[in-house]
Image (tube, rainbow, N blue to C red; front, side, top):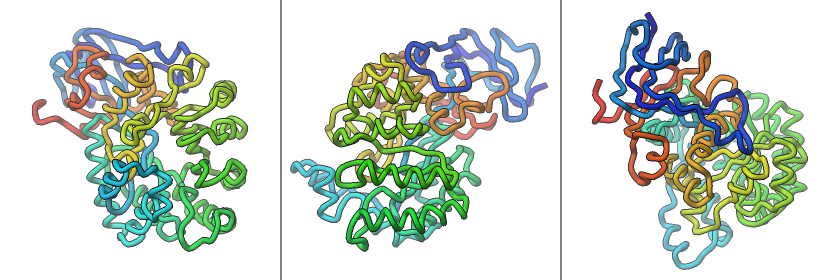
Length: 414
C-alpha cells in the first residue's frame, strides 16, 4: 500500500531527465495516456497505465485530468513592501523604466517601503502571494532580495524567504540581489559596489541565507565590469550565480554569463546574436520573462532563436511590484508560446525541468519520474495544448508538493 495513489489520469505529460533540456530535446515530452501514479515517502514510486496493482492510504480519482510536473517559477521578487500602482499612469504617459527610477520611483520606492516593513509584515504579504502561486500549479519558487539595498533590509528579506520555505509547502529558494539599484545614500555605483564586495556579500555568506547571487547588469544600474567583480567575489564566497542580463538594451550581460559559466542569464530581451551563441556554447540556461515584456510594452526575448541555437530556455514570471505585478505563471507560459514562438511541449519543459535546473534542482524535481520528488499538477484540460490555448483562466484543479496536496480548486472536491 502506497501513501498516495492517483488514478484515472487522462494523460500524463512530462519531460524526462536530470538536467536542462536544450535544442530539439526541449520539445521531447513523454505522454502516457490512461495513467496512474503511486507516491511513497514524498517521491514518485509508480508510474503506469490503467488501474494500479495496489491501493493507497489516500486515493485520488483524477477524473480524466491532465497531469504534469509541478511548475517551477525560477525568477521572482517574492518579498517586498508595498505596491507601485501609482506608476501605471506614469507609464501610460510615456515614462520609461529608467525615467521612473531617476525620479525616485521604481526600485528605490519599493526599497523605502521594504525598509519600513517588519519581517513579519513582509512574510505575511509574501505568504499570500505564494499561496496564489501554488494555486497556479507552482511547487518551487525562487525569491530574490534586492528591495532593501542596505544590509539590514536585505537580510530581513532573505530571512523571510527562509521562514516561508519552512512554513509553507512550496519550496522557496533564496537569491541575494543586493546589486539591484544604487541606493540614495551612496554617491556613485562604484561606492555601492565596494560596499557589496567588502561588507554585504561576506555577511550574507556568513549568515548562510542565500543560495544564489544575482546582479542587475544594465546601463543605469551596473556595468558588465562591475557585475563581473561582484559575481567573481560571490563565487569565491560559495554562492551559485545568476544575472539580470540585457533586459532594456544589449549590454554584454549574456556574454558575461557565458564567460563566467553562470547557472542562468535572465530577461535577455535585447541579447545579441553573439550572446545567444555564447549561452549555448557554455550551457547557460536562458530564463525568459514574457510577463514583463507584456506589462512594459517591450519586445519579447527571442526564445525561438535561442532554442534553435541550442540554448536551454526556462520560463518564469518575474513577479515584482513594478514591471510584472502578476504571479500567474500560466499566463507567462501562454505568452512564451504565442509571443516567443515556443511549442507547448517546449513551454512545459521550460516551466518544469529547465526551471528546476535553473535552481540546481533538476536531479530531484522538474519531471514525473521514479525516485523524484512527488510534485504534480492536475489540470482541467484534455491535453497539453489546451492549457496554453485557454489563457486568462486558471485550469489547475490540484497542486501536489512532496506527495501532499497544497492546493485544491473548489470545483475538485475529493
